[in-house]
Structure formats: structure tokens, C-alpha cells
Image (cartoon, rainbow, N blue to C red; front, side, top):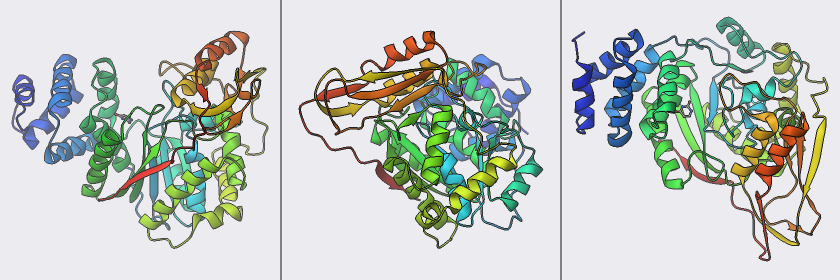
Length: 426
Ligand code: URA
């Protein structure tokens, strides 16, 4: 391999030039080895933030991230594999329902997930509220469970695209997270290394998402779909509305309970609608001719969920933790609910104890928010809008403050916004 100077690589991108494949490969490898300093990689990330990466550069950048670690080999399973990734929202418990449901349709779903940070919750944190459930599985255990149960939700091993962890920590402290090529390569390198054949991306847009406009979401989705397709992973993106929280439950155990309700054919209609929309894309991507609604309604999705939880040491029938401190928040006036702000509700759940500010913080299993009103509801003064759940009075107070302005009540009758926005295919 040719030797490059980090300063020359940074200069090229700073001046909006094109990086050669060898220069990208050298830079990332040298960064992993410790031969490129953190401040040099910071400068390159900032240059990419401003000047972007071409399709070729992004493919090479992503390849190198994948090759920085191991790849899970999911060939030879008895079912086709298909996964889902969400860019993160408030009350987004869809994975808990979707993975077993799509497995019940005949696919294998390898959901290698992460933990929550800030106001969006993490799938592993939610499942860890189930007594006995364990997030860490070996690669052999993942393969076995995919073959026998059809669905696994577990921690993404440290070996998948390890350079992403280093880059992500650096982006976090250098204001370079919000870059389409950097987000796309970060998400897609991990999903491609995971070995799935097909992938649906739920790209969330709105107040409770980190992407605020449809234009930005469209650009991110298009880039990720192209990256997946170029790497042999059949990829479709669905843009979805994240102005209001998804479903009624926000918080770890609360979201597990709501997921079980949906798997039992009950639960909020928006959660069911989004689950089925994503499930239909997933089965179509792998050529399975089954309507997922039939598997939700006949209980087979729920059966797979129970087997999936048991296979990882959890007891799906055990009572979930319940918060000792609970309090209703009521409306101070009559009218129609104009909006429920997903960001305010997400921050409230976080302050109540359901989320973490730093990676190493612990989360409360029982804390969170039950959201009792939706956009368009007619309410009167004193009508309960939320139930706050916390482990102690101090957290309850923080949640109370955060949620105080989450609902706007007005005189105008409004309709709920559409949940499903655009679909982006190759
Ligand atoms: N999620 C990721 O995994 N990476 C990003 O860069 C942003 C969100």
C-alpha cells in the first residue's frame, strides 16, 4: 500500500477534491492503528461534513469500515434474512413486534441493536426490563436462534465495523454527527457487516427525530438505499412521521407491555399500522407471499415473540417492573389537542429515568410516560393527558417540568397527521 500524508488527504477534502480509494483506505486503516491523530481525523470529518463524499468515495469509505472488523456469516440458514433499522424515535418499540412477526411469516430476522442515548430509547434497554433476558449472544447462538426461532434481538457485537465506534465518539464531540455520508456509512457498515440479505430502513422525520425535514430525510434515505444496494443488500426506506410519540407508551417496561398488546391483536392503531407497513416491505423484499396481518391476528407472531424471549433466558410471562411513583398530568383548558410534541415527551421520559445522558449511565426499567391523548382529541379542563412513572419523587419532578408544555390545546378541530410518508426504493 502506498504511503499517504494525512495532511494531504485532509487538504484534498478541505478544497473539495476527490479522495482516491487508496487514500481513503490508508486514512481509515492508519486511524485504527493510531498513526493518524484524533485531531487529524477530526479535521477530515469536518471537511467531509462541509464537502461531502461522492458515491464512489462513500462506497470505499463504507467498505473500509466494514473491513475494519468481522462479518457475520448468515449464509446457509433455512430461511432468507431480512432486518430493519430505525433512525430513532420516541415510543419506537416496533422492533419488538416486527422481528417475531416477520419470523412468523417465514423469514429470519437478525436484529443486532443498540442502547438508547438522549431522548430516544434503545431496543436492548426495553427488552432488559424482562426478568432474565440477556442481550449478549455469541455468533453461534445468533445463527442457532435464527434457524430455530427465526428472530433474534441482541447486542451488536463489538467486532462489527469497530472503527465506527471510534469515529462516532469523535463525531459526537466535534459537531460532525449530522452529515449524510457519515451517518449513512455508520449505519450501513454495521448492517452490511451483520450479513442480512435485505433491509428496511425506517427514517424518522419531525420534532422527535434527529432529522427535522422531509428533504433531509429523503437525501439520507436515498444515500443509504444506494449503499445497501451497491453492497448486495436489497434495501428499501420508508420515511415516517415523528412529530408525535408512537403509541401510548414511552419507557422501557411500558413499551414492552404495549408491544405485547399489539402482538395479541390489541394496542394503539399507529403502532399496528407502522409494524404492518414495515413487515409487508420486509416479506416482499425476500419474496415471501404472506400478509403479516394474518400472523398478527392468529397469534403466531406472539408465539414467536415468547419463544424469542425464552431463547435468551427471559420469562415472557413474568410481571414487569412497576414504578412506585405515578402521577397524572391533566389539561388546564377545554378544546382540541393540536399537537403532542414527541421531543418534549421523549425528554420527559428520559428525565423520569427511562433514558441515559452518557453511554455508561444506567436506565430505570419502570420509568416513563403514558400518553393518553392524541392530536385531534377533544378534551376538557381536568382531562388526564399523561401518566408519569418514576422510581422516586426527584425524577418525577424532572419529568413534570419537561412535559409541562408538550400538548397544545386550541379551539380548532384538527386531523391527525399521516404516519407513513414516502417510500424510497432503488
Ligand atoms: N446512528 C448510527 O449508528 N450512526 C450515526 O451516525 C447516526 C445514527
